[in-house]
Amino acid sequence: MSQTVEVKFRTYDYEVMPCVNVKANYGAAYWDYERIMDHYKCSEDIAKRASEWAWDAACRDFWEYWQDTTGELENGIYGSTEYAYFPGRVVKIECQGRSGGWLAVRGLPEADERLYENDDDEVGTPAWTPELFEQWAKFENDVHKDVEYHCSWEYAMELIDGNDWCPSIEQVAAQHEADERAELARLIVKYYGEDYGVTRVRWESVSG
Image (cartoon, rainbow, N blue to C red):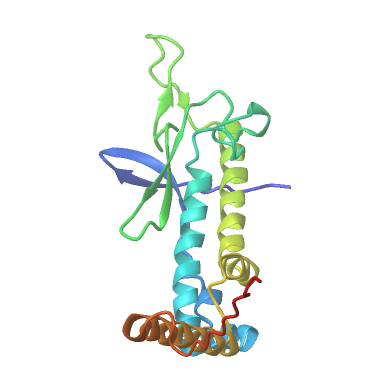
C-alpha cells in the first residue's frame, strides 16, 4: 500500500526545521462550561476557573513530556534507543509559533538538504531518505494522538479531579459556613477573650 508523507517546514532562528502542527483550538472540551457544571454540580464561575487551570496544566504537561531531556519519560527523543523515533540522531524539541502552535524538531535535515558521497559528487542524494520519511510519519502521528489525548474530556476531568478544582455548590456553601464560624470564633476571642461564654465550676477538698 502506497503512503504519502508530507513534512511541513518553518524557519525559526534562521534555521529551517520540520514541524508538527499542534494547534488544538483551545481544547473544546475544556470550555464546555455547561457540561462541567452538570458533571460537578458547580457554579459557572467555578467551572470557568477550573477549565482555565486544567487547560494550562494540559498544555504544560504536553510540552514537559515532549521536551523532557532526562530520558525518564521515554518520549522517544531521549532515553532508551528502543523507542527512538530518529535513531542515531541528536534532536531537540522546541515550542514555536506565537501561541505555541508548532512543535519544531531541531537537528533534522532541511527540506532541500542533500548528502554527497565525496568531493566529486555534484548531485548528491536527498537527506530526507525514505527511512527518515517513515520515521517522521510515525513521530507526527504519535504527536497528533497525544494532542488529542490532552484535549480530551477524560484528561480534563483527570486534571480537575486530581486537583479538586471543581467543588460542588454544596461543598462551597459548607466551606463558606465553616469559614464564617471560624471567623466569628476568632473575633469573639479577639474582643472578649478566650473565656467568653465559659462557666467555670470549682471544687476544693478540705482536709481534716
